[in-house]
Length: 246
Image 1: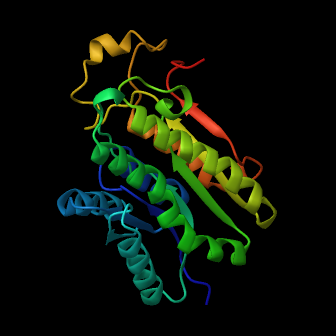
Image 2 (image 1 turned 30 degrees about the vertical axis):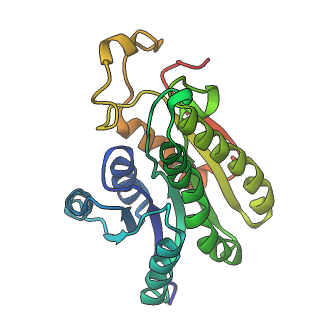
């Protein structure tokens, strides 16, 4: 019997990750593996939002920046799901530790790169062989406008997200023959917990559309890239930022 085809969303408990998890379950019918690091309550809430609408979801706790833990949890998941496979990987987990480069502490540099860039490697590497073997897969990496144009006060975050973009373009070429696509979604200012502390009124003036984006708008783009409709799109960076970088 052909098993279920799951979508894994890292950092899937809140914000953009939650919206992506909900949309992939609702629009593409994937059972969702919601990865979270520490907020079990928010992760359970996301799962409940999916199951309440007739979707399937389960939780998988690990820190994407911790390679040993990530590999162990993914191996455990595979062992418990011998007939199933993860077909869509959304590398969404990321953290910010903002500050001017001159005063940036070692830990603030390391932590951001560890999560946003190494997290992509730690999660994707143990799963990619399955995608290549089944000759189908979707890898969608969530970067940021910071990785495309660079944002002052975010040298660490900009470096991590720019690295993610470079990795995406290279990997896309390696796996294209096996019908595995690899793309980047690069959001600008989106209404989330992460941006709730910012001065929205001032920042809106930087956006030609004069508003922040909604998490659902990012999720819709991810859904499109995860679908069969996006079969000939790979190695792309799609900005979703209201015209902020155009």
